Amino acid sequence: MAIYGYARVSTSDQNCEIQVAALRAAGCSVVREEKRSGTTRTGREELTTMLAFLREGDTLMVTRIDRLARSIGDLQDIVRDLRRRGVALRATEQPIDTSTAAGKAFLDMLGVFAEFETNLRKERQAEGIAKAKAAGVYKGRPPSIDAAEIKRLHSEEKIGPSDIAKRLGIARASVYRALQADTH
Image 1 (cartoon, rainbow, N blue to C red):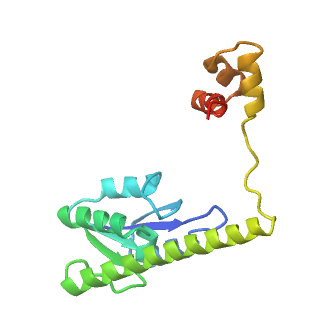
Image 2 (image 1 turned 90 degrees about the horizontal axis):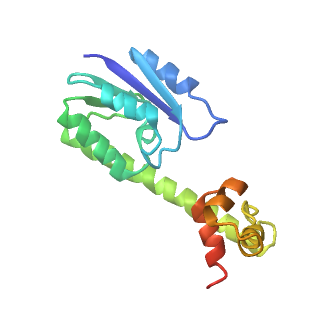
């Protein structure tokens, strides 16, 4: 029966120091931290490790629920798994107690707001990109694959897609897409 902490920030220019300090002050014997987006559980190795490590009677501590998940679906999946295994979930900055109906409702509301905030941020970003494109400022990322070179190698040098991919250091599927672009 131990208290374990999980800290997360989204970008490499952020750090977890404040979260880690708060988790240690709350009694966490171990704190795992990572720099990954919270919009999905995919690629969050430290979270996966922490969740696999927790045992009945343990407590998972975060500073805020949005550090654990920014998707209500992911949050609900994590909470269900913790509850099934007899692991408590607490937050240092929010009154979360997953053993009560009120605590569960509060947790769900926070999860909904975290997901809402993420969706608003995506909308604002899309609006900003559209505005920049309309102004001719934003042109997107330059193509990383030279479709003309792929077509030349295939038609003039009679090189097959696998060898073109190896020569150019790209995926074979990219070669096929470039070659099919002519047929559409």
